[in-house]
Length: 87
Image (tube, rainbow, N blue to C red; front, side):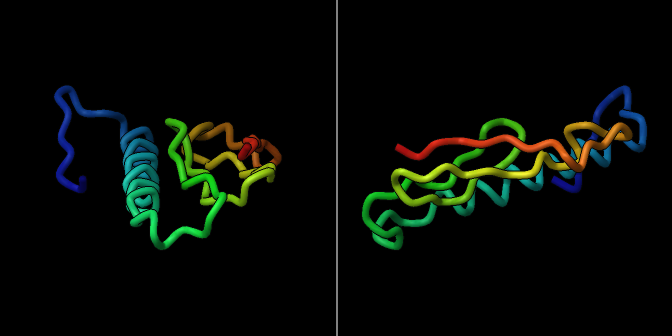
């Protein structure tokens, strides 16, 4: 991941945002790939929605997560969040 090279290269700031997003996806995949035996019964596993990770959640719960800064770049919105329902 640290050896990602694009031609033509990305602007430095955008390259950093892209790397942050890729690392977040990588970390989420590691969480998602935990063996099912390690998860409590009636849970929704961690999932990557293409922008960020939602952690493992109990069934019937609503999970809210702050939108990560790499989504907005220089126009960061610390008040922005999204939610998901675990049936």
